[in-house]
Length: 207
Image 1 (cartoon, one colour):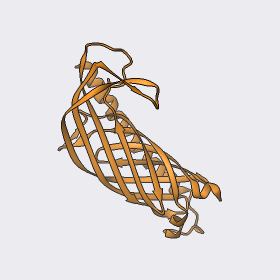
Image 2 (cartoon, helix red, strand yellow):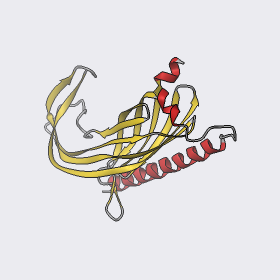
Image 3 (spheres, rainbow, N blue to C red):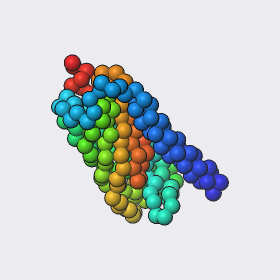
Image 4 (cartoon, one colour):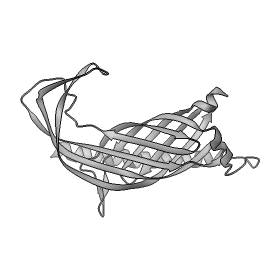
């Protein structure tokens, strides 16, 4: 019980830290603006072709207060073309990739969010992206007596038997800045996940 309380406290600290980082990133970006910059020039999206990686907390949700029962660290990816942005972040069962083969069966869970939105180019190097999407958490059991082989990672994994699924509508906002041509650094804050994003704009790198 004490370990679970410490874990929930750590997740809450990570969520608060991520939200503060996004706010600071926005303030920093706005201070870099100049009077000569052209605001809300949607032609900037014509050269948008980015791919990126996400890392953060996924699986919490609101029911009058923040419920962190299924919250944990997840990873994912993003892609945007001509301003249309799509991403996901996923948390796998904790014991699924355990290397040991044992008779133990663990209570586990997963968490997932999938979001879509459209980039609003506030400035040529600053984008705000309203997001809507889908999220879920599943509960189940991981059977560590089973063994499967993953050819891509060259490691074993165990069977995860899903029991229940909880579905949610997701919404939020993303913010990204481009400190160098082709490199985008950003953050996303939604009702069910908070995470950072690092992406590369292929079209602008080629220029």
